[in-house]
Length: 143
Image: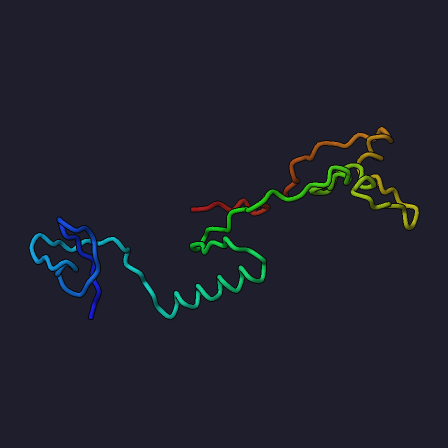
């Protein structure tokens, strides 16, 4: 027994197993499709169960199941503490002592200022030169 959706031109929409209006009409009744087709399988039930459990674990009520390659949309902007010192995203070349709140000091008397100390010393770095090579001593050729 399959319940279908029908429309009687005189009395409107109704559900039933046969094309007979609740008021008894049998003429001018058309089948309509108001409810979308539902796909339910063991796999989809498992996905729904996992999504509900994740929503409960993270106190979320609007979790969205995404397709492969997608990600959850960000719900809220992250909180930013305006009084916190800036966090560097990488190495600050030339002065590694200013990375975050770390106090980098010499362990064995070496210079910890990187390239900044080289610049201060006035030393001149030479540009790279082409590598030297040894010519073929047998004068071999490709045929």
